[in-house]
Every structure is written in structure tokens, then in C-alpha cells.
Image 1 (cartoon, rainbow, N blue to C red):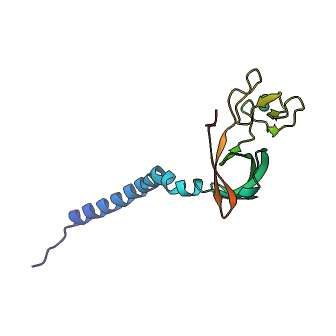
Image 2: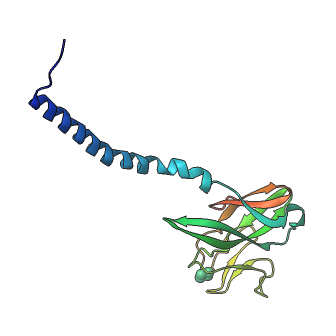
Image 3: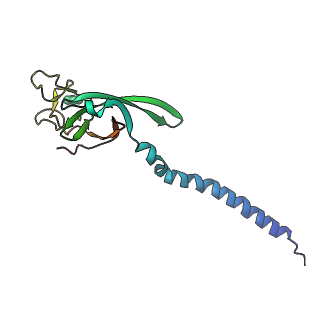
Length: 166
Ligand code: FES
């Protein structure tokens, strides 16, 4: 038994096939954009190895440099940054150096009148050792914290998050 395909049926099948192909071409990229953050979470959540041994971290905040590869579209670049790192009992604390007033860089114990505080030279901002902003100075919030860890004896730095020490 042979089945003949009429010209009308052939045209219908052809148009349905082409239409399906075009719809898939539009919908599939949208789906990819919708779930893209799921694929990126691993890379963004990874810890960055530093060159400082965990045993060398003292109670005195110290500048610890780190770098990572930043992907911006097709452009890849190496970004360098640093954190103020110190030990508080068994805990290692890493604070962002970015001032919460207008984004200048804070430093530890560089103001002679405040030897045990972070100081921002731009507008005389002050922070306590735990990152809490000193009332009456321009910063409006505490310094952010970095997630920290230890890998093979060396400090690792992770995501930045709002200060949980204050
Ligand atoms: S930017 Fe730090 S006090 Fe203004």
C-alpha cells in the first residue's frame, strides 16, 4: 500500500518544519540566558589562594594582596585587590579596604591620633578594628567582610559580604 503526499500536504509539512526551526532558534538562547547564572555560580563561588601562611596571621591587621581573572564578555583580565587581614582568637578576619563613604581606600593605624583604628584620608573617616564605622565621621556603614578559608596552610579569600562582626 503506497501513500502519496499531496502538494498541499508537502507544503504544510515544509512550513511547519521551517516554523519550528525558527521558533527553536529564538527560544533556546532565551532559555540559556535564563539559566546562565546557574552555570556561573561555581566560578564566582571559588576561593582565591593568597601567598600568606595562615600561621603568619597575627592580631595586627595586615594588607594581604590577591588577584583573580575577571571575565567581561569576551575580555579577560587579571584584577589585583587586597584585604585587611587579622586574627581574632581562632578566627581569621578579612575586611575590605573600600571606605563606605565615597569609596577611598582605608589603611590601618596611619592616623597618629587613632593608632588602633582604620583611617580613610579622603575625609578623615574612621573605623574600629572590627570594621565598625566610628560615629561622627563621614562613613555611614561598616567595612565589608571577605569570606576566608585555609588551603594547604595558606589563606584563601572568597566572596565579599556585609560586615557580620558589628
Ligand atoms: S571616602 Fe572615606 S571618608 Fe570619605
